Length: 476
Image (tube, rainbow, N blue to C red; front, top):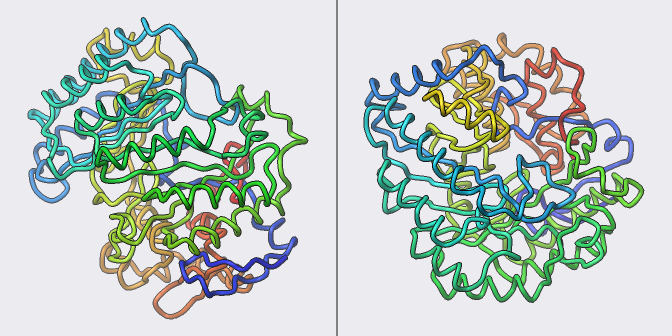
């Protein structure tokens, strides 16, 4: 099967042949590498005390990597009014808005404990509200939460302040409120414009509704508008998804996030309502991805990486061109490789060489905070080997390359000796046309970007030791 597309942003490039044999061999479950090690490696032996210690160490450093470097803050709002069948997020489906007050009080308490451990109000260059549905909160609740955050941390005026939006839950007036509260970036959850697909996943939102809201967002002066799409949903076909791609491209969002649907019904209960027979084949999924790549590039978008596109003038595209692209738990980012504080149920933090995750249920989250402790239930302190491999994997995921010299200088290792087994395994990927190898390392090819996760997986020591991968989504 041949696709005319470009995975690196050159519209006139003829993409290579993706054979069924290659697809069958490469389309296996694997991590998305929003972190390394991945969250499934977190252990319960890592406690709130370890996070407090990491926060205190940050405060003591004061220089590079310490208190002198701005942080990112992620706020998880788990509530949704209705369930989307494809969703794998930590969410609470309810129409009882009375549950919000207790949650906001808990968020405030958690933030106070973080600031207490830091010993001061940290500077924050990136704030993101995710969910769930953050716009489940009403106007007064949003005002209150932003006031709480603004009184505990120093939100930098040039920072990125973003929020995820369900188009079914907002109006122009709500967008105006968000702008007045300091949000300068918004993300619309669209997924697909085809009505049959929307009905199959229980998320019906007409194209005209999204189009009107995007016009309003432009008029209100938001710096950036993102649209989320998913390929591989039930009742999708390459033809129907090509229409959605054209419709989205004509709306001209600054950024587009394109995710492959991961059907894991044994892990995520809502997905059991999806009819497996209505899911597209692996060949059709690749066709959708190929057409999306070609379609967005032909409309002037640059391909950032595994799941992101951006207009050339957008800061994400600029970061890619300048080699400043990073990856965190929200995907690709322009922000430096900085510490991240996750607030709310199930939220993940990264501080120094540690990861930590909050309790996944409201009851446990509340109970831990009542004991005046951070609601951490598991995490990980990274080893030196983890740090080396994280640098390599993130370089592959963000820049499509591994520089032997750069890694050697940064980590004081003999890269070819340290990664002898991995470099040997890469020869198979080179024969498949996914990477090119030379004296300085590796470069991901245009075809390799379809399988960039598979390239990164070669360097994942934890994954190599564990053959049970069904907890991950498939690469395509």
